[in-house]
Length: 251
Ligand SMILES: C[S@@+](CC[C@H](N)C(=O)[O-])C[C@H]1O[C@@H](n2cnc3c(N)ncnc32)[C@H](O)[C@@H]1O
Image (cartoon, rainbow, N blue to C red; front, side, top):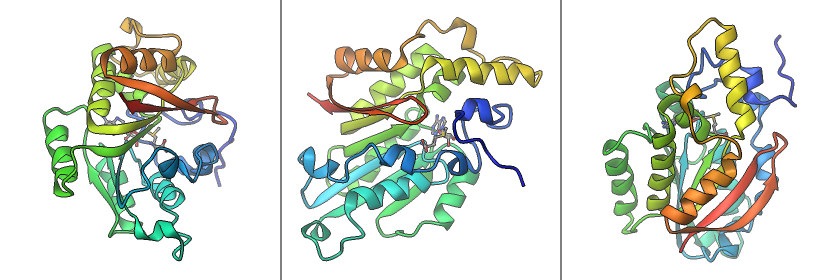
């Protein structure tokens, strides 16, 4: 049986020819939810003043839903039913462009009352905006309280270019009060492009012409702070794959 080496990152370890959008199957066997969750405090919602009765979370690029479900449990204190937190209602919407991954997420969803998974390409405007606005609108909210975007930015950037990366960040900022972002560092881009070349496939459409390169977390921060009225409020440190987890807040 094939085993994955845990210390290498997804772009080294997987075949981007088969997963050109990062839509890896069995992603969580080599990057388990714990790698990210261990950095995120269980009390995150309370810490940022979201201890209120209703909290809406959007997880963009949720893959097969493992991290979304684990995050929901982590933040909603599902495991502590007698606690004060049990009065609070947390709802999570996970979206991903890969229909098959979404089927898997839907079929293994342990909390269908509170967690929903839908197929959606976040770069598809106005479709994605309409769908997401209608979700929080149903709850009478002007936006999501928290949006998480783990390991998605590089795939949008490689497949659609600089402008698409910036509009993804702007879109996310417009959809939420808080944004928790894990942007892949530049070395991952090189690995992803190299692997594609090794397979004899043409390079990602935009790789060579990307002007936004280098410190990707810093670029994301600059755009969110200068163009999207957000500010960095906390860094939760780096994952085992050396990626920072940054929390931004709407100003
Ligand atoms: C590397 S995986 C990360 C999965 C998950 N966020 C995590 O960190 O555990 C990237 C995911 O982003 C999804 N994705 C890529 N581009 C997307 C887009 N434009 N809209 C929605 N999902 C996208 C892929 O299908 C894939 O499941």
